[in-house]
Image (cartoon, rainbow, N blue to C red):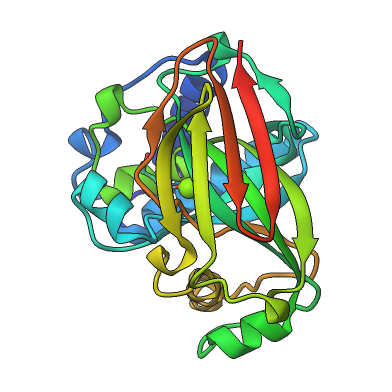
Length: 262
Ligand code: 0L1
Ligand code: MG
């Protein structure tokens, strides 16, 4: 690590305040070019600690930049991992207040919920499928705190991978009954189709994103606990939304989920 604990705490406070006040900032590596990966995840951990100290509960985890479409959109090549707080959750069909966000975008995702712990290193797709309770449909709302979504990967990790809101819904299914690679998705904005794709867009199979998350946590002495909700990453590029927009995601065999921005 290259940053001291005071700097990590200051950067976490700065980024979290930007999130809570819906205001943007420049990427933090401009002032701290020496920041390394451990520093970036330490800042993210400190944001999580601050939220929990105020009474929030961490209800899930996420993998981001797991599809070629997202990597291409962002001009980068490595997945990233973040956490989901209960304050990010929107009820299925619910509303998301526009003035609490900076420049939100939505992503269609396949959601896993675990029934047994997953530990890396060496976690693989078969272990993930055996440890999965059910899968369902999810829409992630990302909202980078960085001006015009201009950032580098370490700045994104520190900013909890742009996490902002999420909604899950539809039908809970055992992944053993489905071929999640060929599972099709259709996302609509105000009734118009804006994204089409299939599960294989996420690392060949979305369970691979969960395995990578377990291996990432394993390298940090942690694991994915049983009962964790995991967003496996956008299947297509993220779609920008405006106040008044309604987003509906349909996933083959998994039903539909939706939210609107007011
Ligand atoms: O969920 C994600 O794919 C996280 C992406 C982080 C970068 C971004 O803001 O798009
Ligand atoms: Mg995502």
